[in-house]
Image 1 (cartoon, rainbow, N blue to C red):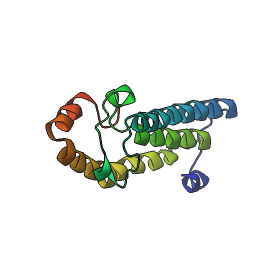
Image 2 (cartoon, helix red, strand yellow):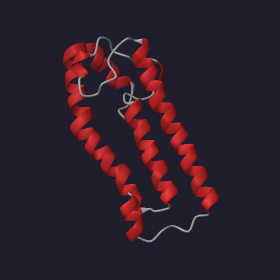
Image 3 (tube, rainbow, N blue to C red):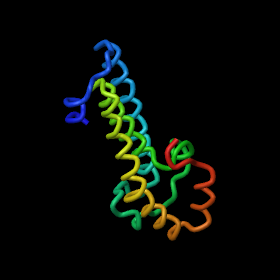
Image 4 (cartoon, helix red, strand yellow):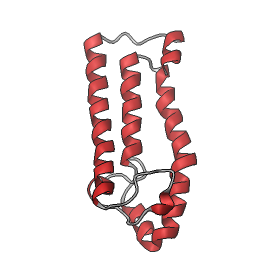
Length: 133
């Protein structure tokens, strides 16, 4: 994202505005991620996205009633914050690439494992909470 911002035209946005937007997005992203981690810790289940098969419970309350992936939403918002700070519309290719990559190579495999582990309970949860927002 930083590299793209160096070779493409920047948006003419005052420093205060772009820094303020970046802080707001970064705080929101941190909040989403932290809420997801806290919910998993309270449920005493794994936070490790590389080992979804070790999940001991399905968390579907709190932030997980809003989105099935609050930690990924949090990371996305931090990337959007970085793009806002860079003041580059082209830097938004970073968050777009993140969504495409993480959906295909992380979320889809996680969902297959969770469907196997929690069956109809997970299928019902999928119909109630969106993957992103």
